Image (cartoon, rainbow, N blue to C red; front, side):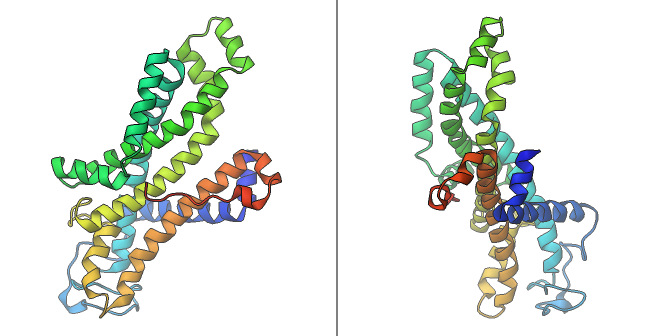
Length: 289
């Protein structure tokens, strides 16, 4: 609760939290209602300027852009959450193996992480897409694998640090197994670092989905997606530039909100950062790994 209060007390935290909640709300609302059917084509309404009832205008097929953005929020949330789950499982598993096992296993995991972390997320996704074809499933797994390695790299030293704490040693002396120590003591104590990394990973997932869908490796053209919408409108940017602004703005604000939320979570979870110089707290997250 104190962490949430400190998070809301930070300007970046409030901004990031509001943006994330708005995206979640848009995704939830689109499940039951959109102003128009996102897939409905109306040739008579092609390139309608922003006005009622098309508040953001229409595209070259007469589809309502506001409805496409609302429906595209569902895809964004699915990819962000799905990638976060995959990254969590992979990151925690590799981090635990690299911190709690025998020396040769720890060193092997460390080498594996160093190798995988050298590959950018988008390159991993494109390599997997070349084999399995472009789909949201590929995006979720490729981003999850790519960022799960980053999670493992950060959580592994934290687990090693907490492993030598007095309460962990006391738990081990009392007969707790390695798994019990991991779930009761280790993971709760590295949760702040993990949650921060997860929020940045979800920002990477949003940007990766948009980029891969734009390039044709992500969501199929029949599925509402901000990247697909951006790709379909890009050829007309010189004639109807305003239509391209809306999906681009949605992607930018979502990625910015998640990055700022992660930065604020890091500061809120560690009150000692508030006492340091502002330059020491500055963090520019790498959106594209």
